[in-house]
Image (cartoon, rainbow, N blue to C red; front, side):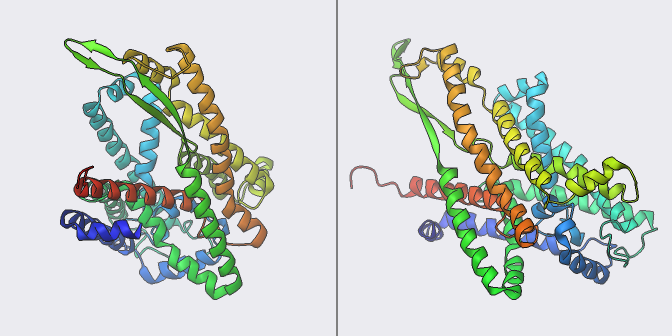
Length: 434
């Protein structure tokens, strides 16, 4: 990896792309620490420090993770990339349900551009809802329930509240724009790079806190972290390659086909999406208990005891089972074996030893189910690491080497390095003759 970056900086056009990407990242981090107008900075800092000391009950863990710690600071980029991620997931699900969106997806680049535009509109709508919700929580004191200080300068100024909502929504729009700039003029996928940046941003402070608290625990965390990174890299790189042979066919006076290729099926075909789905669904019981804290309802009491925090066996089992379920669900809607088999048959492709058409679709379904089982278990076990650390050792839920963090960092890191190496090969290919 270090060699690839060194060679990239020696290549003028790649160096410009890398420096441009680093500049966008610096601008992005500046917006993550820049407070929104109308926030009482001193009181907010005091409440934030108090909340970090008792973070085990934080119901905003996933959003806080994807905002790089900016959410509870109410910065300009407080919402981070989470509205865009949510909008993208919703559009992916709607493509399967709504025929119009499915038709757009099949239109190629033009249809994908239209779906991307819909994703942007939905992102803005979600940003308005989320910013309004968080500002309302800050105004009523529920954003930091255990802090009695007012985090807004003038909670009764409606114009100021609306201004804060507009600025935070605009911050989400700027994040989308920065991500697209990186994709067009930088290196790697822009949105993935920004997610990577926000997650890595909280690592130094978390590791420093662990080191100051207990040096032995810090050493154990580092060893566990290195082991987890190695395991994630090993599984993320694993794939089953299904060979595909294309028969020769005559079109006019030219011969086409006769080539061999393969269909790469990854062990973790679903990526990080099942973890986000499961976390979002388990966020609802925590939200219910926070809204009905004074209720004597037996159901609310049971939810508060078993699903409101991550250190209970029922919460752990629910989280694990939801990840397994959503892994199978997401793989089933993103990879369609009958459609793949029909496309292969249309262009004269076949799997050696398997008849085209329905037998090919059944074979692909069989292989995909066999691969999804270990992939779902892998996602569940990796994601359980911070929850188990919380329950066993009393560690913070922002355990620095949490499963979600490692999955995203390793995935984005591998993808970015592959893109850099691919561009280096295009510029420095020597061929067979020297």
